[in-house]
Amino acid sequence: MARAYWQGTIRLALVSIPVEVFSSTKSAARVAFNQIHKPSGKRIRYEKVVPGHGAVDADEIVKGYEVEKGKYVLFEDEEIDNVKLEAKRTIDLVQFVDDDEIDPVYFDKAYYVAPENDEVAGEAYVVLRDALKETRKIGIGHLVVRGKSNLVALKPFGKGLIIETLHYADEVQKADAFYDNVPSKKPEEELLGMAEELIKRKTKPFDPKAFKDPYEVALRELIQAKLEDRPPEAIEEPEVGAKVINLMDALKKSMSGDGARGKAKTAARKAAEEPAETKRASKAKTAKTGTRGKKAA
Image (cartoon, rainbow, N blue to C red; front, side, top):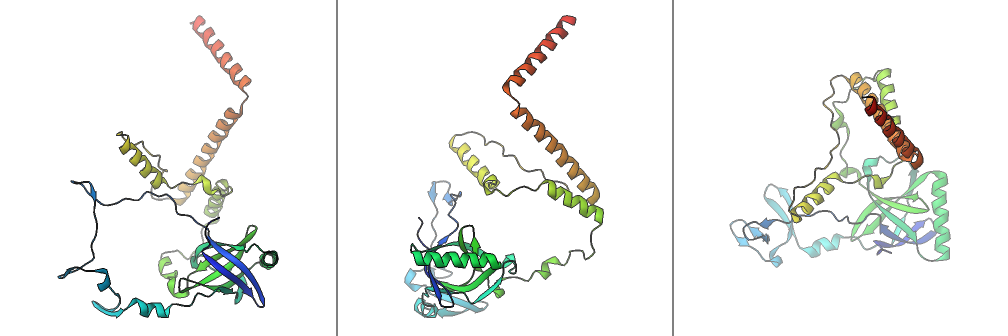
């Protein structure tokens, strides 16, 4: 099992549950580039320099907070360390909210929460998980990691629990300013109905394995082509429609095209599922018909 990101207890009133917290994501093997000096083929390195002074040593560097343009308040590392919170090993669930009450924009990163390998801890863990499920609530608390306090939401997830870190209110931009151009009038019923029908046609269960980063795929193909000294294979790009001029026409064309593709896929699927004997008989019949045609000619 992966190394725990945090170990401690979840506390609900007088009930304490020993848990371990693990990151829910892993570092993807994404393509990363370095800057290279083309004539020599060597990697470019960077030095920390001060304009008009030149390169500086690491022990001459301190942190600074800009209070005015070009004016900084300077701090030593020890001063900042003194402000850091002590490593608190408890997540106090101080409040509960409805499971759909928190706007998605506040959620940041998810972590799996597992009980310690202990019978009592496991029983309390399951009780809390099921209580949250039955009441459809999310627990709110604070998690202190590396000297910083994170606002977190605890909720049931599959057979266990998951914690999601939350942004504080002053970290989230207000949405209103970005929606000034959204029309206030309601859409026409016919347009709305066609859009809903199009959505229904394209609705199916979510499978994360079905999605790949097309940019990453194209980069890897480009790298492989360079290694093999060949032109890169063309990567199929999704069709991009023109700017919508007439919404009604665009919806009708979308539904028509979607329907045609659906029929084609169904025909292809039926052909693939057709028994081999049927296929051979069909080919033989076609060949026989072709021979008769040639004789007649």
